[in-house]
Length: 185
Image (tube, rainbow, N blue to C red; front, top):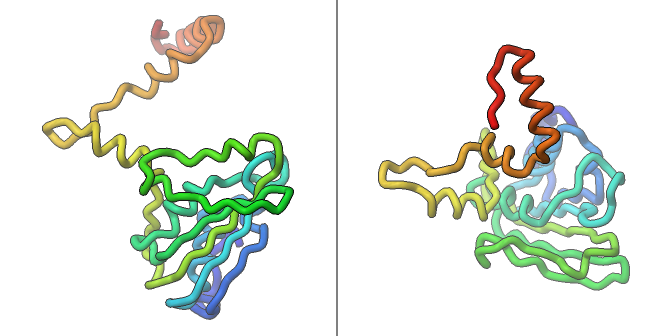
């Protein structure tokens, strides 16, 4: 699954189900593309993956936001529905963060493992380049555009420097000077 699938597997199946493999595959973009490409137009993709409190289970833990941002009409899918299930078999339908204009939190998922179930219908071929952007950042970028159409953002370095403890800043400033760069305070 780390490598592209062969042509004879593309658009071959009416339903593709991943029952918990993708979080174990290092090249996740290739693996999810493979799953998406195996589904026939009008077919369905069903993904089941650990979400909360499965630390160490695989390489990754995914949020519902990933599946809402990935399985959309630009990328060839529609009618994406996401559910979460806790260890006592309670089911929760997850709302799309783009629609509710905020991130989705599961406060009930703080202590127990949760599974995410994503179900989506394929409506067209998968584009060569998938467009996957987290919805709250897209909204932020849109709202922060200035008159010239450029996004007004704080420098990433200055943002990081605000949260770094002083002793680490001093140490990194000395390291930068050793490499011929001026340290910033």
